[in-house]
Image (cartoon, rainbow, N blue to C red; front, side, top):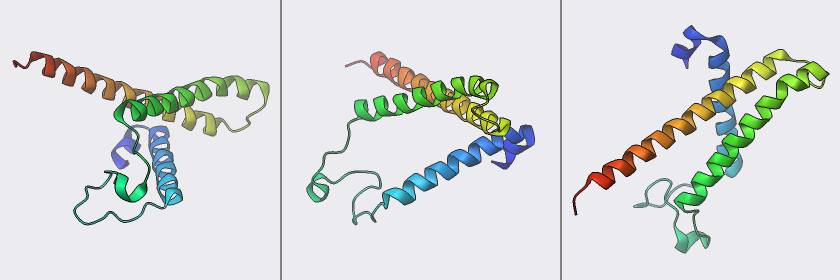
Length: 124
């Protein structure tokens, strides 16, 4: 975060806001301690009774969140002009956060495409 701060104070604040939101989500969910021998993040269907979302559902939910964040950031400059939002700083942070989320999603897409290509090159 400090390295980002040297380049742009706006980027640093966007990353800090994203970290704060992630910490709030984690504290709100009250994640219980994992059982011994169970990998962190792995869901135990026997103890929870609910099935963990599969990869496609998790990917779809993540893309929906990024899409919603980008659309809300795109409407913020218009809200500033119409007087619905008075704080320019809030708009700048939201725009930078949306930009970082979009870039992160694109990097994930690139890694998935690279992994697919690598699998297709394997001989059976």
